[in-house]
Length: 471
Ligand code: NAD
Image (cartoon, rainbow, N blue to C red; front, side):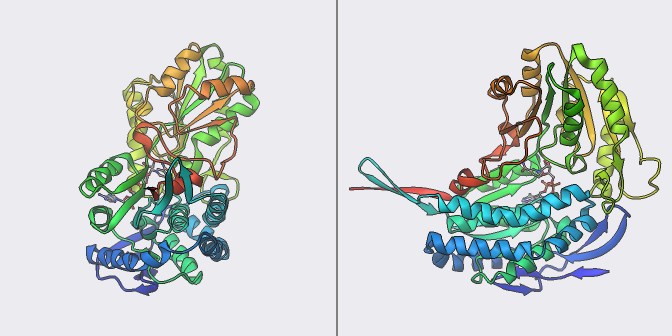
């Protein structure tokens, strides 16, 4: 059993001052596979001090120097893609298709940020003013367990591009992925203190970072309740914040959709990362006139989906990350019928052929009204609701009738018409007919899905402060 007992501060692997140990599990087998020693508030303060010392030199680097750092980081992470994929499979049971995307993405974010930087002008003239975009200072980044490596690398890439140093607190449930990524980033040979990685508990290390006076900005990906707590903690010292939070994405099948492609695409978007994705399209909105046909096809398509261990390439739905998450998803599956919904597929318990592991049966509810809790709350598992609509206006109203606004999906044949519908959706991104990720376009949410945007120039500017000099 492995023990991860080092954190990364000031360019070196060090033993944390914190002594608490947390267990690590393989969710496909429920076996305990290791332990991680958690950092404490004193470790967090040491990391912030190192980042503060490294800031003046990094903030003065040229664009070309930062681009060179980003390329080094890309090469170092790309060289460990296989190890990272193995860690993701073992530690959170992500299916092969997701691991493939996610491990590559963790390296590519550096090249994408280098591309953004190449085209970015840090100075501009506005009338009599010379405006310069200044790096904010020390950034604290806090990441969730789902796709932890991608978030660590994305937040690090943005900080470096802006000339900010960073302290990263990854999820305590992703320590194996964090270890692989940290070793890779260390191999890139950046100056000491530019990035520091302290795995610890949210209410200890996370809380210290979000209230520390030397931290200028917090960039957080995680749940909406924790996002609120961070916003409050950051207010005292006016920290800048980027919050990437939860979602309850509408997945709208339009009346003219070709169901041969729309149904499998809508299901893929709904069950992304075994349903453990902020961007999952978990509310399938179906036109009433085609409802019987859509339900029949959804039922057949979900029956064909393979649920199981992540080393099987045919698997689309892997296990939930933890016993706690499994219990939570089961509670929602029980809640559906209590609220008056009907099971079209799935239900409580594990799939019949899986005796252990935190696996959930891919579940679809019909007879759902958008007022039910299963339609309003983020379940974070493979549980979908089908909500019928009479006409387009009602579809848009239901889509927008949610606290969230991260990513919406449209399925149809008339792309111009879908663009017009997209203009009416309260959503940070709208994906038409399963379009692939666009890495330089802004990503982030309306309403309770967050504050600010990541990626590309929109992400870069959240780490910069304009200074205007008037002559
Ligand atoms: P979480 O909010 O429980 O934890 C996220 C991180 O915050 C962890 O590192 C945790 O230790 C830390 N944390 C907890 N309490 C804290 C506190 N008081 N102060 C500072 N930090 C604290 O989320 P999770 O369960 O790890 O991840 C799942 C959630 O993340 C879902 O809600 C999902 O929608 C969201 N998510 C959002 C995006 C996005 O880009 N919008 C992407 C992935 C996940």
